[in-house]
Length: 238
Image (cartoon, rainbow, N blue to C red; front, side):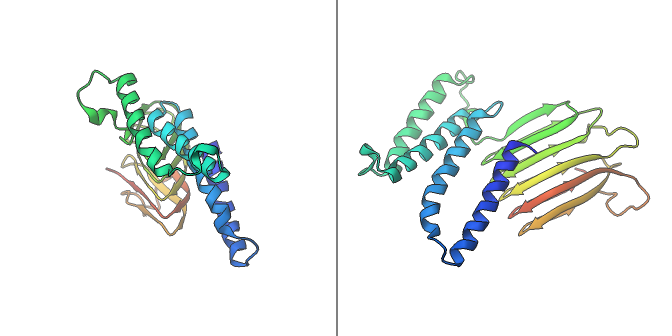
């Protein structure tokens, strides 16, 4: 299990227990949340910064935002009488200026290329798929000649995975584990692949639109399993 899936799962479980305890008046959930959401911001910032091909501007923004909110709640001197929101806008301007100066695309006149929320694109020939999108989008073209499966995570973002040029060895079945929370995942597969879906929806939806989805004479080439909460997963032959 990938570390980002583990952390996200633990956060959801802890939140559920806290809500349960709040209903029983065991303690004041509001106090916990006031410290929990700055922690979430800090985690998101670190996640962006530590990713391969990370989104450094966005990561720095979330990290600073989380730290400032923590400082405000702990009563750090200069933050006591200052609105964090009023400090964020100058920080955004400074970060954007640094992005312009140090971006690899700094000579480009197309500012859309420097958008930190822009959907990322990647081509992979590895046998294992590993794609994640947090508050962003990712588009992966997977071209493995011996595809085994992998992991797809989308939280407050979207992931589009194309397996049209991938190949599963004869007699084998690939397994892709999906975790989708407040986001969307779309997986494109070859028309001769039969896909079996074992995804648990929780206030979400799963739609298998592949041409062989109801053909009981074909062997299963791909199994999609996992969980979708407040989001959607679609598998098709597009």
